[in-house]
Length: 263
View 1 (cartoon, helix red, strand yellow):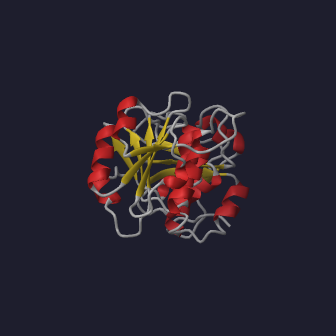
View 2 (view 1 turned 90 degrees about the vertical axis):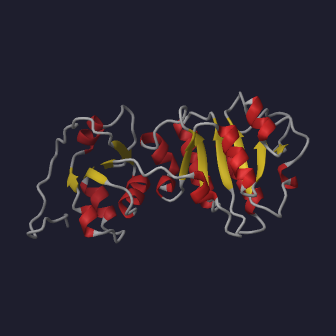
């Protein structure tokens, strides 16, 4: 079965899609990232391409017909040419426009549920950011806050690593992370920075208020001002043989600890 046009005819397939002039659109690829985008009514889709196997899979998801109608048949190698070299698209790619920017106060206002927020300080690796978003969504985080200038676009490898989380987890792009932490504290959050040198284990995080888990780049860690702005710094206890954890693994552990009594 293929998407149909308004007249009930099958859409013309395009086995050799061509790049179009840049209009601010970005590419989302991989089955979970693309399916989540198609299911998100706030995501504007420009066009999409899918192999027959990928389209058969999409048709099992009960997506809106008008969204599926945007997708045309394409060979895997044709999709390859639209994306960055090495992109693992699983036979499915969408050209779409970025989501509307979230405002910190709008999405982080506490609602009594003590849902956490995750804050990323100068983390630039797309795979790590996407994995953190995925963990944040899994543990019911209200939002992710990233640095506006140093964060890569929420597309491509980042979106694929997030496995659909960028469609459901509001993302706030902050000009200044330290000021964002101050705003969170004004809203009643306990800003808990992760630092391997801290004497406090993450199990000591307070339970009487929502937590903002603050993570720094691997190696560099939190910047001095960001660390000083946190209410407290915490460590994840690990064996002496390992110096540190991958930032996305550390995020998952801290988010679990922040929510284990409320989920």
